[in-house]
Image 1 (cartoon, rainbow, N blue to C red):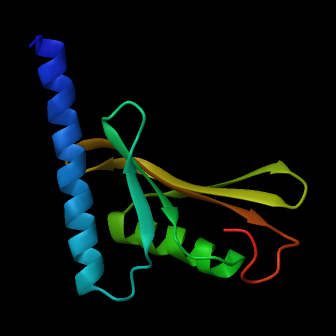
Image 2 (image 1 turned 90 degrees about the vertical axis):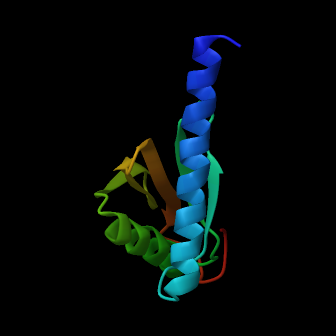
Image 3 (image 1 turned 135 degrees about the vertical axis):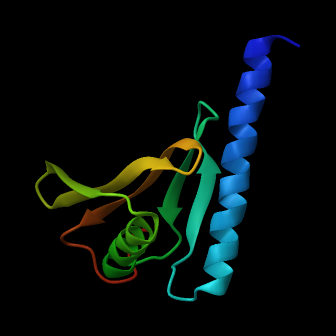
Length: 113
């Protein structure tokens, strides 16, 4: 096995271990909303989206986890009535953790998700 392959496997293992820690933290702290955690396409980071439906619940989920992980939240307005919320940065020995959602000004609570 090439050294680059071993390095890639190491990054993936660190990311998977962090996901395990985050899920265990969520089990212990009911105030942390459910997120769908996955490895990013490069395998060296984690991407998460809220499992909740409804604008307010998704926004709360991103902000609660960003606060828990000490990640800054940035808002973008790519179009009228649309807000992207993104929190990202390193967590522990994982280079990149991204938590994101899209909010729509005209959505009713429980729509989209």
